[in-house]
Length: 384
Image (cartoon, rainbow, N blue to C red; front, side):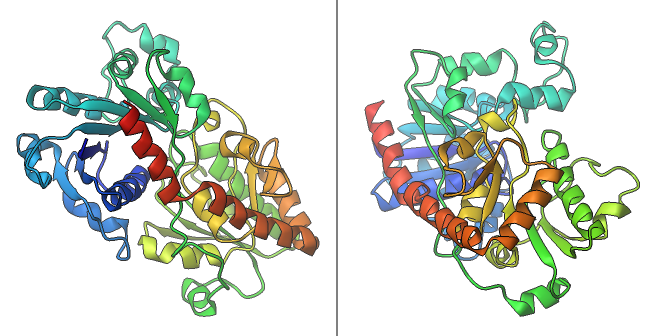
C-alpha cells in the first residue's frame, strides 16, 4: 500500500476539505503518496490557508484516466477514501472502478438521511418509498444507493461513534476524530487593532461564531442571535462576530432586531480565524440532542477548544465525551436562555472561567491531534 486518493464531494470551500487536507499531509509525512480529487475547481486548494501548504497532488473528477500521474510510482490508488456517500462521490467511484483496482473506504460525518429530509423537506420514509419518482440531487445521498455503496466498502470511518448505526455489520469501522492546528489556533490575547478594524465596541461582551447557516442548523444559529439581543435588552452590551454564509433566511424578513448587534463578515480567509476567535469572551456551540447533532462533530469545536476560552456546548456528539465544568460547560441544551445564563455565570465566576479555559486546551491537546489521529487512520488502512 502506497497510494492514497481522497475524494471530496465539493471543492476546497467545504469544511470537510480541511480535514482531508490535514490527513493527506500527515500521511505524506508518514511516507505515503496522497492525492485529493474534487469535482471541479482544483485551484481552490489555496483556500486551506496561506500557512497550510499541501504536500499532496490535487486532481478533478474529469481527469480520472490520468490519475496515475498524481502518484510518484505512476500507478493508480491503492486506497480510495471517499468523504461521504453522496451521489456525486458515488458516481465518481463507479467510474474509478472501471480504470483502477483499489480498496474502498467511505467516511461518514452526518446523518445522511436527516440531511436528505431537510434538503427535500419530506420525511425520509416518504423519500425512501418514492420508487424513483423523486429526483435526488448529486450533492446529497440517495436513500437506497448510499446504503448499497456502504455495503461495497472495505472499511468505513465515522467522525462520531453513533454513525456506526448506518454501517453494515460486516464492514470494519474506525471512529476518526479530526484534529486542530495548534500552531495557529492557540491561546492568545485579543488584538485591539483587529477589534477596532472590525468595529467591535469597547467594553462589550463578544461572541465569535464561525459557521454557515443551512437548513439543518437554522434554529441553532438563530438562538445565538437571540441570546445576544436578550443580553443587550438586559443592559449588557454584547456583540456577535460571525463568519460564514447564509443559505437560509433564518432570521426572517424583519431581522434588524438581531443584525444590529452582529458584525457579519461572510467568507473570510482561514488565516484570520484565530484572531476573530481570540476576540470572544466565551465560545458557544448552540444546539441540543437530536437527529442532526447526535451524528456529527461540529467542525468549529476543535478550534474553539484550542483557543483556551471557556466553551459552552450541548450534551450530544463530542459533548458526551467531555466532563461538565472541567473540559467545557456541557448543558442538556444550548438555546438562547441557556446561553444568557451560562455567559453571565462564567463572567461572574472567575475561577470557573479559568478552569474551563485550561480544560478546553487540555482536551484539545489530548484528543484532537492530527498526527495521532492520522496514525490511527494509517493502521486502519493496513488492517483492511
